[in-house]
Length: 95
Image 1 (cartoon, rainbow, N blue to C red):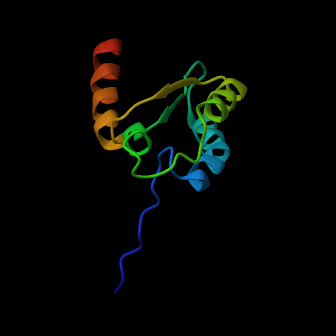
Image 2 (image 1 turned 60 degrees about the vertical axis):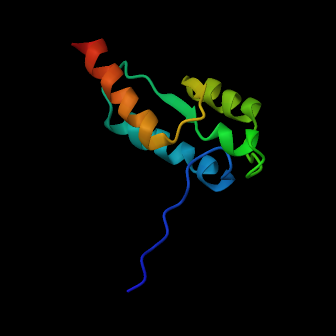
């Protein structure tokens, strides 16, 4: 059985960026009032090192974040690493 390839979710993949609105709706439907959303553009190093062209401009991402009332941040880190850091931050922030 062939394993389904996961979609990449970083600044080099326009398709996943275009799907963000449905994810935001999903989060807001299940979240408590007052939650905040952070849009994170990952893997800047792919563009900086010339390995893969950027498909989502910083301005596009910032505009989308502004439209949905979210914070926006870009990083060279892979999302898995960033997620681990974010979990630690949230744990200490709310403890």
